[in-house]
Length: 479
Image (cartoon, rainbow, N blue to C red; front, side, top):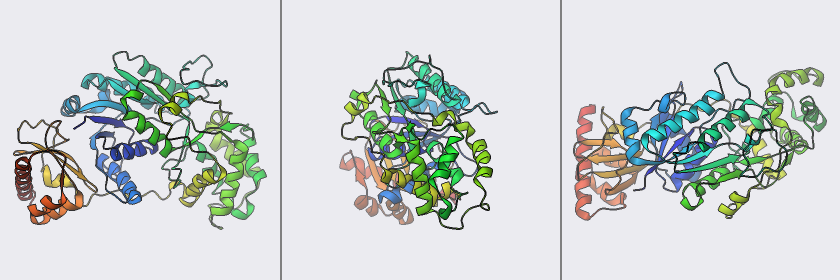
């Protein structure tokens, strides 16, 4: 069994697509996740994967989920979790970040982007992970306007906002961690939704003007001149160009690089095939309102343009530096590494896919209901004493259950612990098969519907007997 890749930021837009693509490629993943007010860390991941499963029409493996906090030393992991990671993980994909453009009272984006990166590096040093993949941003170039090479890294020209400044500091910290074995840096430009479905879970950047304008303008009143006027008060030039990149393409490219060791140790610009003018974006926002917004959905009564402009300025002022003209970004390393995945052209038709999803989804409102796992496989395996403790039983085996409520476990005579063993027989099944087995303890279900990646017939029969005994023991305990 290959070792685990640790992923931060798995519940964000890019992180969720990275998680999906890594799991599709059979990369074992540990997702370091913070619980929300309404969902546990595991439920947050479960909701993301169930959505992808509905889209793909197939079950996906589940990552190991560990509760974390970017603001805490070594991300707040327990000693048992760190000990497990030191034995089972060999790579860190650090994707978690704050998108705040102006420093907040809570210290963002610096608390997440700088302190969070420092704490992540500290964790890697502790657990012995020396392979580091860092998600930076193309805009660490700051205020420079010449062609930006992938090898360029300088703060001499200053920065347009706190986000750029914090991400530069984070990338610098990673580059200076000379104890790391390899550092691979990804620099995406402005991330937009899925190129096929338009799906997005965040509405920053590209979506910010739409999020403010769409609720205010009825389809019959949508005019290019009006939308363009909103841009002019921020100093947005219709001829200025921006780099928009679909999240599924970024994740596909990154995953292909992560799984190929020959491509590690480089810096990759993920900045798309063509830049889009502010004028074209304004035109497509108008087209989107006309096509996809239902009449009568405006949240407030129609207002004169002169009254709307100051309101728009107040809402968009934080993005003012963001909407300046983008430089051209060199992509030599990226195009050489993954020629099979050329950038997605940002045509009118492609951009309207993103606009349509945003308008029809009402910019993510109402929010999806919290995910609840009806039958967590963990409840049948772990009992009340779930842990990451090492199992030394020579007859231990790995169990991977894909689909709703699934996960990875090491099964031994005396119990189950989370995560797959490094060198032992591996039994795989989907959660429907596990539930059918659990209902009647029928080993015939396992023999006919589970698969084995390794192990002799004797080892397999011994494992099935151990699994049945463990499930029966926990069933009695849980009564």
